[in-house]
Image (cartoon, rainbow, N blue to C red; front, side, top):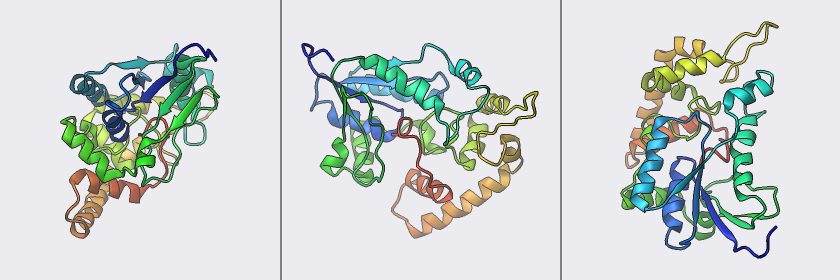
Length: 267
């Protein structure tokens, strides 16, 4: 650690609503903030567009960090095993390592967008020179406040929130089945690319992004999945008429699968 250098203030953007709102919230509080985005090269175009919009509206630079090698290199290194909730090598190799290399041995304060109404920790570095702070949790900022911050700033929500409630790679294994079929509708080329990774190897091994069901099987049930989601959404609208469409969709998806998403990718 270099004690002669000033403490760096860093704020990671995931392409999601909470980290975006935190960047807005902290912009005037910490003028020398460094904003960064860990780019896996497998992001949705809507994510890149949202980052560009943030840079233009806030007048800040978002540094794009990336691993020296791409996803396919690491997939080969891990012997073809697709990342999963139990083996999140993509997060380690393509998010955490580039960030820690970016900071190096400098003393840094990392601002994390975990809200006061969330029960999760977020990414806390094991490196002693990187200290995590949680301004939203400290100041009592909840989801409704985040939506207001984004709306009042004029930045709004990322476009993918029309059909997806979590940021991350287009083939993220934390996607719910409805999000997979909507990926097929909105980005059929990316869905096809994700399907190519679900291959049978010469030794008979087979990997799937969604645990227990391949994308081919999910696609075969597409109409059923959409119908069931829409029925749940209709019930949610009737029970919560004051909620926005985005909030209703997010609530329904969380009911379908409330598994905690990646603490790095989804903020």
